[in-house]
Image 1 (cartoon, rainbow, N blue to C red):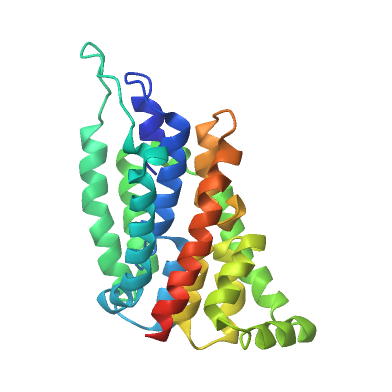
Image 2 (cartoon, rainbow, N blue to C red):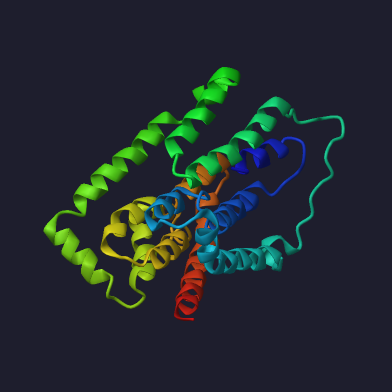
Length: 266
């Protein structure tokens, strides 16, 4: 994420940190909606859809483009960043860049994407982890491995939850409500976050595109809608940042959901 970079730059440049962190979280939710590997819910739904990388990206382009345009419009209005003025950096202070780590990461990422697209996700992940284990063990030590375990348990527990007759009947009925999978996915994300919502709802609909649009829109709204929001706001550690986030994110949720509903009818 770009939040650590922002916090690092704030040590040498006078920045509106809270506002930048908020808009980075919003932009992350919007931009990550485009790519099959942009976020965990897309990666999961991409594998379930059976589409190729390009086909999935094209299917997500309308909603991702609309969400990103809404974020840019908010950023350009006077109460966003339209009147922002940043101090010049101190030329005597520099940020360290680990060039070998950057180069290896730039090479490893497309290799992983190619492997996933070819159906060899585990092999691709193994190659990337192996490369970092050999050259950058400190990076692997800094990975939040318990978080990966949480995602694995989510797949298992939510799959079992969806098999309960009462829960399955409710979820199936909700797919027939106005807005269908898109609206229900967005709404459910506000209570359990968008990745668990995608995992839970995928057995109850064949319209994976509407579900993907909904859970990505669900990243806006309440902070719990996306794990990225929670991480960004916790890293930001700015006074009042949680309240400020919702002042921007809730309108984004409503506007994005409305735009998504219109686009799905076209």
